[in-house]
Length: 597
Image (cartoon, rainbow, N blue to C red):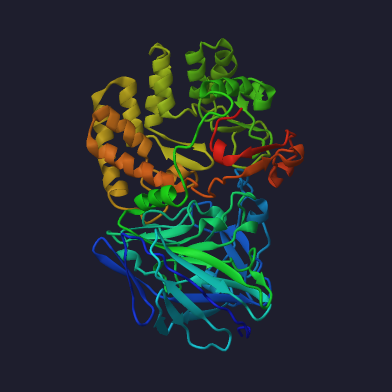
């Protein structure tokens, strides 16, 4: 039985219309925005979620096959709407920021569906009164609340929505704007909900993205002509304190309760900060309505530059970039870099105690060659090269009991990717015949290099590197043939599932896009435009994982308060001690992304 709530609140919102948009308000309060020859209706629809007790907001593993990702969930009353099943997590999963408090917490009746997180009241305006400078929207009287709203006619640069909630009863509240246009999944050209739902990958339920996980505070749907969204005001995602779930003031969603694509904003998050309210306490929030004649990445860029102030703001602070590089190299030679000579690798103990991990020997090799640095070659590049040629996996430990991230202690190399074998062969003047032999073997086999993901050697990328290693044109021909199949299956149509023809699991961000860096390299070899076009598209989608918020403030920011550097709890749990460094206050507007050492 749903709890009975007595509350009163007033919604106030105003729209500021850009010169490029056409606005029309109908007698039923529906707002029409036109762009690129098409019109879109934003209706005065809201949902209010309520819980008399704390719903205990918590991140939990989403349970998406082969995707490590956490989503907000809420406790449910008894078995009602318990649509979330907590996944079993093996002991091999840890580190890389994975929070054991999330992964291994006790099982409970929970929901990941925002519409099931509390008792829901759906609201829509039924009367419109126009004044000289505003359009007043009135709502039917409700036993639980009263709703009023208005549209302001001022001209400006954004279509903005502002609402105010005044509850009459104590409890936990969340207000969602649900009036944006909705689309069937098969009718959308592309969609986006940060962080992982890109191209045509849609959430399985109305999952919420809390603000601290949003690279922009919006979700978007593109119908082939325009991108449509609802964006929270960036002021609700401040630069300090560090954005976390605990201080996320809002959440965004893409899927509605009818399983249609519909950009939505919920504020506050039920069970999150500001959601516990007392009778008479006012809560306010603002969002913008978005209709842009651009694709998803074009809209993302427009919002990042215009609303978030993104630009090329990196400048040198106290030293040049060259000096910064010199300082980093000097640092890498000290014990602070945690290079373990006996294991020929850099310690990975922040994630896997007792382990080292190397993914390439080429970086120290390049530095040794460019700087003519004998020490860098003998103490870093050469040991790492031996590691890459001899080990079974990137992650190596002598501890046979260590299971986190599935390390290896076997010498069954080479673990070096075929691309690295090709570069090493060229660096040493093509004088070492074992490099081509190793490369040919890797090309014809499959290997697990990282975690438990098996990589097939016979693919268009490795065929490209075999051509660069051997100069055999048949490899380039094969690379192009396989790459064209990849374009057809992966690039020319937006992907709807996680994983693609070359990636069995999605873990690191490059696996969520097409392999644009390799496509660029193939273009540089062939000069054929289709590979450059595909690389350009993939690189733009990769920017969707780049944070454009919080905005950099025009104010002083203090770091290392108390003379202590920040320390995450999971490092302390692995025995690491907090580092000490002097307190410093800096004006972020003048520093921006400067170089420090």
